Structure formats: structure tokens, C-alpha cells
Length: 277
Image (cartoon, rainbow, N blue to C red; front, top):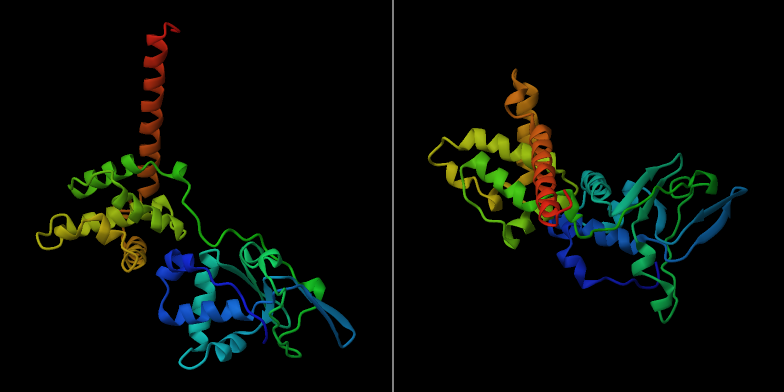
């Protein structure tokens, strides 16, 4: 491989980096180094092949070998699955190889800001790393990371609901919003956040020792949240009365309904003040 790529310091603050294991971080950088910088075409056994900037054809084994010592096949499989969930890349299996497409590659590796315009090339191996042009399809990819859509959740209402469930008194402050926003940025939903809150509240609220852990910075901590969510899902599957925990969607809908009613009431009061009704 030749050439170079840009690695932005903001990666250090991105959820895909912050919540990755050391092995996943190694695989992430390896993938960035393996990506083709420019569109590439070639012919092999009478067929035309092509990849676009930000793409490369490879195999699990190739990524493992390039990542180096102590990286296993399972490490690579798990990392690819996770990176795809976080919209860092798309991962498509074809008959002759695996097509990896890194999201927003062109935005961060544009030729316009590359003084040498020197391509990063990836060697291709017959039968394993080659895919006909007709088989290469790219899915729509979302940004690597970004600010959560504030309209998707009303932080004040959610934190008030959290307090009702847990018997706590947390405030609607940025430090608490940040925890919620971070989990949403990772792809978790409002219903999943609510599911964890309800599950742990039922488990811990009446436990003198554990009730102290009913905090936003515990339940929504990056090192805990996914495990708590899996516990809640497993509990629902085993429970004969799923309604105990499984009505998180209803809770979210109820919060939205109350918000709309409050907005409508405020609008009506303003209209009355202006003599419109």
C-alpha cells in the first residue's frame, strides 16, 4: 500500500471511537488504511472490475492479517457488525469478496484538500478480493456521527419521567442531557432508553443498597447501557407477564401526548390574550 490519509482529531470524541474496545480501534484504523482513495478499474479473466473512493474489496481474513497480532477473525466480524450499526460503514458480502464502504469518505478525504493527490491503493487478490462491477452496489450511508436530532426527544419531559419511575429528583441540565444524547447518537431509541429505566427501577427501587444506582450516569453510562438493555430484553422474553416492563413505547407515547396537550393549551391561552378567540 502507498500514500496517506487524513485522520481527524475529532475522531477521539466520536461515539464510534469512545465506546470501542482496543481491538475495534485497531480494526477501524486498519479499515481506513485499506480503503481506496480514488476510483479504480481493472480487468481480470475477461471481466471488468471497479471500486469507488471510500470503498475496497476484501475479506475478513485480509482485514485480520493487516490489523496485526492478537486480532482474531471474531474480532473483525464483531467490529464490522458494530461499525455498520453505528453508520461508520456498510458491509456487503458478494460472491467473490466483501465490499466495505466507509461513510462520508469523500467529505474528509477530498482531493481538493490533498496537495499531492496521491492515491492510497489496496492490492487485490484473485478469487477473494475481486468483484465484478455489476455486483458492486452501495447502500445509502449516514454520517459517521452527528448531533442527535433534538426534536426526537423532549429532554425535560424524559428526565421528569425518569424521576417518576426511579423516585429521584434529577434536573434538566446539560450533563444529564449529554448522557441521553450520547446513547441516541449510538443508535439506541427512546423506547430502549425507557425500557432500561423501567427494568432497573423495578429491580432496584425497593432495594436499599441498589436504589442509589438509579442514576442517569449509571443507567446510561456507555460501559453499562448495552448490557442493561440486553438484560431487560431477556427478562421480557422469560417473563410470563411482559406488560411489567414491556410498555416502554406506551410511556413514550404518553409523554408525547402530554407535550402536545400542553403546547395546545399554551397556544389557546395566547390566542385568548390577543382576542383571537
